[in-house]
Amino acid sequence: MHDFHYREGELYCEDVPLSRIAKEVGTPCYIYSHHTLVRHFRVYDGAFKNIPHIVAFAMKANSNLAVLRLMAKEGSGVDIVSGGELYRALKAGVPPTKIVFAGVGKKPEEIAEALKADILMFNVESSAELQAINEVAASMGVKARVALRINPDIDPKTHPYISTGLKKSKFGIAADRAIEEFKAAAAFSHIKVVGLHAHIGSQLTQVTPFVESLKKVLALVQALAEQGIPLRYINIGGGLGITYSDETPPEPKDLAEAILPLVRDLKCVLIMEPGRVIVGNAGVLLTKVLYAKDGEAKRFLIVDAAMNDLIRPSLYDAYHDIRPVYEAAAHGEKKTVDVVGPVCESGDFLAKDRVMPALNAGDLMAVMSAGAYGFVMSSNYNSRPRVPEVLVHEGQIHVIRSRESYEDLVRGEEIPEFLA
Ligand code: LLP
Image (cartoon, rainbow, N blue to C red; front, top):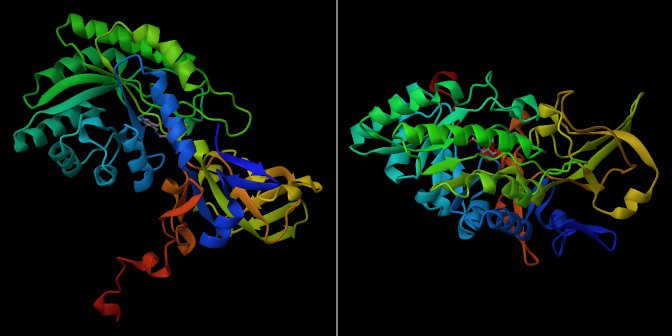
């Protein structure tokens, strides 16, 4: 459920017509609903209220400072994957006691920054990384809390680029070597093993892979306890899917119902790292048709947003619903169109062979479900300034990231003396 809906023929975000945002902020721009963000967080967090837990929002999905602040105010922690994300999280006021640090390639500087901030724990992906963390912690005279990320070898039945829990994937430590690795970890002088982490993939539309993964995790937790390595935290990662088109993913309460009976009696804190399910449907990318062009084979709508603004269709062949801002346009004759951007690549599209109302130059449209992995994956390709982000709250439009300027594009670049 989200707060983008038609009212008297016009698409609104909460009580604000998108046309007003287009007028005031310009297009393209990302628009997020504060109400949806808060509701999504509360629904997720609330589903687990009967057990000790931490929701660590996977900020890679959307790392705008305002979004992070809002999450922190709701009591969320964050799952970070870089020093840059740590910087953002601390700046937004996320308590370090709720920050977990994942990723296969943490650099010594990043490890040091996280230790300095005294974050809750590192999710460790290899023995080499464990060694690196131990060294940095020793040099700082502290102990690093860690969870080992195990790879449960479960097929999440999602896009191969976003499956992470299979044996062939670069993530985690193989489940059959886990005990050995945990023992080795526990022997390090500056490491304190506190948890076990398993994230199997993203955009999961069934509960079963979560349950299967958790069962493997729990068997390990028990085996570890028997070997004298009790764990305080179990991290089940993120991955709950959303509806982009006609998917019917489980709701947080369905996930909770499936896993709570398995973990209720453990004396552990459950950590979850949802990203997409919190922000995905809370945001849209607003764009304007620049030109309509009837090609030999089909009609193209050339819009002012492109693959550099939203790369998911080009990269994963992902489907995003596209809605005209004025519903009247939707009642006109439908045509099969490609919605494409101005970038000089055939792979630059937001929708392919889509049966859509015959929109024309000047028409506004919203690319739906763009709140997760949208702006954060955008780039300046073709020297296109990155677009603004807007947060709608109680009838007000808040620009939470301004449109980049041409000066922003060249910031940090220099022409060396010898070329002068
Ligand atoms: N935890 C870990 C360790 C992860 O690697 C991820 C996502 C998450 C949590 C959050 O997963 P979520 O709840 O958002 O599914 N760019 C791709 C998605 C990449 C996901 C990477 N890892 C996309 O646009 O679909």
